[in-house]
Structure formats: C-alpha cells, structure tokens
Image (cartoon, rainbow, N blue to C red; front, side, top):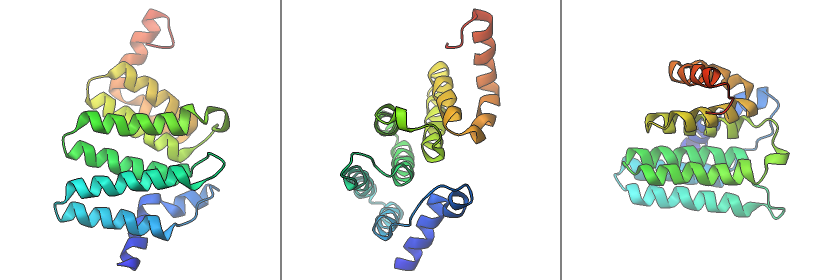
Length: 178
C-alpha cells in the first residue's frame, strides 16, 4: 500500500518535471498515503468519504505552515483532485467552490509573492476550462490569462478556438478585458 501510494503521488505531482524546472518539492509520505486512500475509496464507490479525505488534506495543508504560507504544489494537486471528483459527482457548484477557494488562497492572498508558479497556473488553467465548459467564456478567458501570467508554458491555452473568438471580440471593442 505504501509503495503504491508513493508511486501514485509521484505521478500526480509530476515530481521529475518540477525538479527539472528548478522548483522545490518534497514528497510528503502522509499526503501520498491520504491521496491513495481517497482513490481507493472512489474505486470502492465511497464517494462522500473520498471527498472528506480530500477536504481534510486541504485543511491540513492550509494549517501546516506557521507563517501563513502553504505549499502550493500540494494544495494544487489536492484541489485538482477534489474539483475533478466534485465534477464527476455532478456537483458543479461544489467544484466551482473548490476552484474559488484555491484562487483566493493561492492567488489573491499571496499575489505579491507569486510571479511564477506553475502549480497554481495549472489549477487556474483547469478552472478556466471548467468555466468554459459551463458556458462562461469571458470569465474563462480572464482566468486563462492569469494562468499564462503565472506560467508561460500555458500560452497555447489562449490559442484555443473559443479563446481566439473572445480575443477577436475584445479587439473589436477596443478593450483588453471582456
């Protein structure tokens, strides 16, 4: 169980890629085991229990550091898993709430400290796609722009057909925000 937990968590966190880009990240065995436990609960059909596990992980991450900062990489991974889980359960409001909570914590509260944060950018990219699927194209585009500000590797996201249509509309209106 422990070995499978660590393998699963290593894949989730993309540890090799993070190290190759110079980002600090340490594998947290406790979090790995909790993530894997949530996965087993999902496989067993115990969806509510899995949600509780993800929410507890997020709460633990938020309370880890005494100086008020959290580990955005761990928070990002758990946020994505919980948001995906809520979407699969058909609870769109809950999924949006998960993304908004992350946005408030990682971006709004720490805006002056975040110039480049690939893990936060990935969550914002997922949030942008989520909002696009819900039909909120302008909101989605604004979120995607913020994601690209944090991680330039996400620039291809703005080249999507839906976003190009919004860019064209903004250009016609003469504004940068639509």
